[in-house]
Length: 111
Image 1: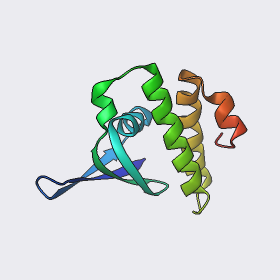
Image 2: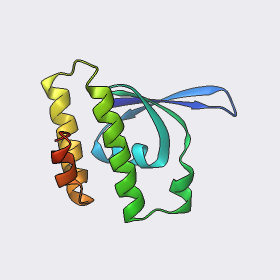
Image 3: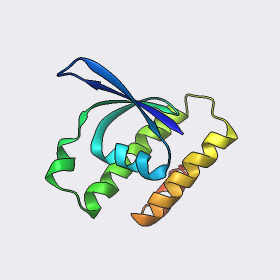
Image 4: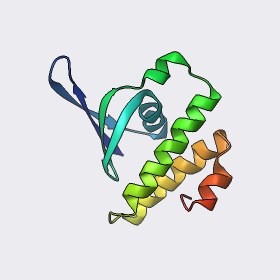
């Protein structure tokens, strides 16, 4: 589905992590400070400090909301296949429903 490139500053080592499902993608979004390169490639710079401080409903909701904003900005500048759009729609629909963001995502044109 997606490839995540993680660069460890302490050891100057790069890692590739293949995301196999929506749960892995959601874990990546909430656990790491990420930068989106294109529709299916991300760079993880470091663990998100807030992830270790507080892992609750509002944290996950805000992390998903912020990722959706960044995704919407980046997706508008790239060509995306219908298959990729369906995968993203499924992801945002599933987790938007779980965290009460469906209405917001619909109003903002994410789903």
